[in-house]
Amino acid sequence: MERTLIKDTPKKIGEKVRLCGWVNTRRDHGKMVFIDLRDRTGLVQIVGDEKLGNLRSEYVIEVEGLIKKRPANMTNDKIATGEVEIEVEKVNILAKSKELPFPIETDGYEINEEKRLKYRFLDLRRSRLLKNLINRHQFIKSVRLWFNDEGFIEVETPILTKSTPEGARDFIIPSRLQQGKFYALPQSPQQYKQLLMVAGLEKYFQIARCFRDEDLRADRQLEFTQLDIEMSFVEREDILNLIEKLMIDLVEAYGKKIYQKPFPRISYQEAMKKYGDDKFDLREKKEDDVLAFAFVIDQPLFSWKKEEKRWDSSHHPFTAPNPKDLKFLENGEIEKVRSWQYDLVCNGSEVGGGSIRITNAKLQEKIFEILGHKKEQIKNKFGHLLEAFEYGVPPHGGVAFGLDRLIAIFNNEDSIREVIAFPVTSSGESSVMDAPSEVDQEQLKELGIQITPTQKDVKKK
Ligand code: ASP
Image 1 (tube, protein in one colour):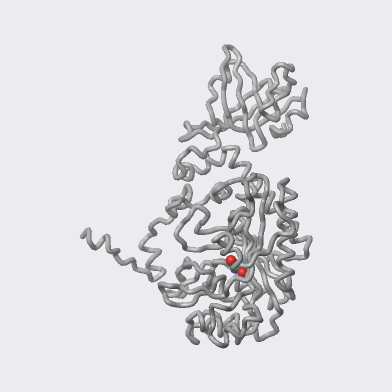
Image 2 (image 1 turned 45 degrees about the vertical axis):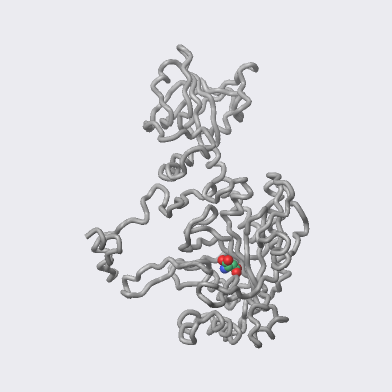
């Protein structure tokens, strides 16, 4: 018999069906036993005799039986299938289960997070998390459809690549074939998406995995997902309008409200003066269903790194200066140069950022020099991009959104870990699997790598 999903049971009253799922709860009433059976689509009540008494929570079972309408006074309006129940004819245990290490019928916030992540495969059985994953899937699906309708093309870019600076430390991967050399995991697809503009793609997007070896904070993960976009023949205004349209469409599809339309555009200086922060919340009181978006523009192109005594890019080195401020680049008043960067904030978090790019190889070199790169380094690190710009580069710009953060906000979750299937723990270990972990001597030998004892080990000896 074909399997029926639990959500479809109310449509099949009077029919014999086969259901599969997990025992959510069991209640014994003398000769009658009630089971709430769970699959990914919901819960339904199963009724049988003592034979059901040997079923325990989280056993995986297959049930055949008749769907009956419950008497009016017996319906359960807490579950979507509450007006029906299944009268069991046959039960088959497909797998038994040990007792779970924590309850899964609660929302789970009360449970130690390390423990939840160690048993993430059980934690995800919780209806809140299942819903978050389904919503994430729907969100990404709508994003893909939206960009497709706008004429964008999704392109995957490499994970084994060369460093692209986004202000964080790189993860590096040793090469076996070229011992002593390393790949870097992308902090973002920045240079590739710019190369795709040189290639003539004009409208690119990607649901892109990015890697940054940073100290962990509540809203940071070592790997995270970006919605990454780049467009040719556009100015700042075109990109801001596109972002605004995308956000409004997504918010409306999600049944939420927008605080202010069009999104206010606030200069960085104004934001710092008014809110003391470039990530601010426009809302006076925090209503859950209202999303307050604003653009922050006109950021300074450079910021001074006190400890290192050098200029750094406020965004990244490919961001174009405002042409009106080019004179300050010439006369050395570096701090006065405004950039063509823009950030999108939502309810107090930064959810996206981007810029119009430099397309003049000379200007790009000058920026690298201000950032302290020597000529030789520029050639080694970014020669490919500068060379590409010599073959007809269209004016272009783009943006990237932190997809995990956006989805968290849309689902009223404070932590992005609640909308990621297998996030890393706050100490940087992967959920379930114990990574990072040691590797075999053999593997290290193949890579030409030797581990030197750390200070700690030396002291022990
Ligand atoms: N690559 C930038 C980032 O990851 C976004 C952009 O400039 O498009 O923040």
